[in-house]
Length: 249
Length: 246
Image 1: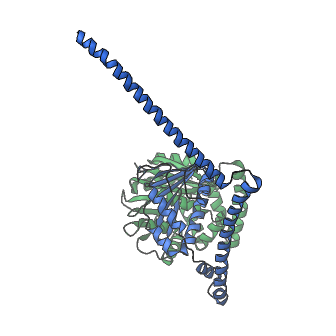
Image 2: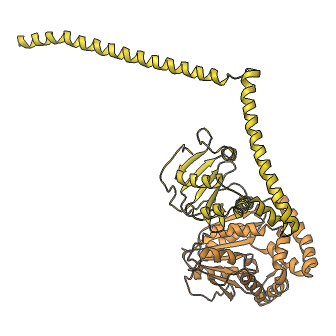
Image 3: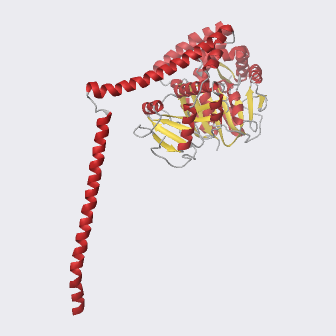
């Protein structure tokens, strides 16, 4: 197997074709308790990270928004309120379990007018060119096998002037914080995963995949290379998470 | 509220692309969530004010210089929305240090010498101010919801509400009484500041001196004018003689 035929799955080197299936297994396993685990893992701070993403999206009534790897629908719920009846939100995920949880949650919260649900692969988005005013992908890009392909696919479906927002774990700016964060990720996180979902491996993968994800600067360069302009990123919680923004020229 | 500085109704129609903060975005978000929650919780128990806020279409920006961040307030159907990043136009902006803005909150009567700058529409600021000044929270409902719907709540909530109202009234009276006592104690007992009649007498004297000075200045001006006129009259005959020679 050549280097080009393999990719990383956490710290493991796996065949490129295999990664998507392994990632799918992880999210099938954690889907039902994904929100609870998010709250526990981040101490509820993930809500603040997502709130900042919503602000930076500058989505207005009438806009069309695609939320990739939308999981349990946190962002889609807010977007549905912002775009109003004239707008449209597509909540998408490659994983059917996650998408089902998201759809049930939004329906339970009374959202049924302007949100559609699509199971899709970020590398091959099944929408026409220049379709969306905004595309978001929160805590999803690191699980995509070919990130460059996904970025180019997103660029294609964005309208000129439309923006991409990538919310993702990144590299802490402070060495001490990085050390504490490592201890937390590799010791406490799998333990919590075991306790709540009886699945330590999935949460070990989450920690490993975060370390393998490109750092702030690298991801910005990848967005530039994909064709986005005015790219920028904002560190949050000391760089544990970064929000990248890019505009389609 | 008198404006220290006022300009056009819309102060920023261009797109703001800067993320205006030196604090970690997570902390800024926590601040906006905190402020928004406090305001909206209060508004939940005053539907009238909530309705008035929902009708405000313009955006109020509060720029805090230290620490550096800007918060944007606008009304919506379910209360107030507080953002740290906003790309639309802002009608009114207040700018100052956190301390100056907080001091203004405690005494929102004047911006003069407060260290707070105002730009844009004063009307919008007055709209917000009026709503918060007339905020009338239904404490009975708030406590009832907190305690749940049961016999204890039905009995306790009205009693606690009366107690809270009386306590608030007592606190207001105490504050007024303290202000009155301090006003008497400083000039009468410590003699560190003059009494009110002394200050008024002094102000009257200053006003008297000012009017005397004004009168004197007017008199001097009159004399100057008369002197100039008489000099001109003396000079005129010479001029006519010179013209005759020619």
